[in-house]
Length: 203
Figure 1 (cartoon, rainbow, N blue to C red):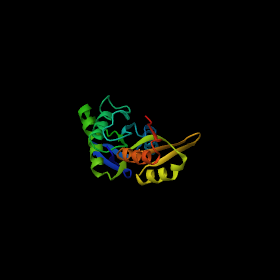
Figure 2 (figure 1 turned 90 degrees about the horizontal axis):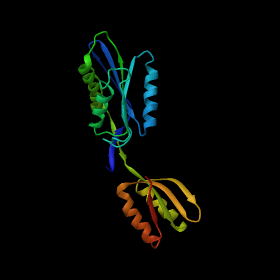
Figure 3 (figure 1 turned 60 degrees about the vertical axis):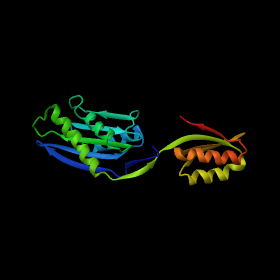
């Protein structure tokens, strides 16, 4: 996936279900650490809340390797997992959802909790504004020093970025590039270097 939507801004929604208040928040989280920071910040805004449940996808939409969720004291599987399920099918990446609950005195039951937590996140997703994110691959390009200015220009034109440069016996540019730009850029630099370009993908 070369481009995918991510949250453009934070969003807050609130629903009352059988006298319980459910306050949902959506935000951007490019990493698991960023998601945890968002969760901590929201929790600090509601110091008297018993339940601050969350779910996040810290990667491309549907990515199952960088996800997390928590029921935060609710019965197991009634909050975090339903929230994560909505995110997984929402088509938005790098997203974190936090739902704060204030108990209103009427028990909802496990099915009611699943519907409530999932429903709040689903409602918020419908209102969420997004922007496009370009999926970038991490590369190390080894090439002659004379090609550095041209390589920088090509990387910038491809909507990539240079993360670091090693000026040793050989020039190594550590950069991030959209997947679709790697082959054409590599071909250009390889031709200009007389076959001296070495491309290494960083996993």
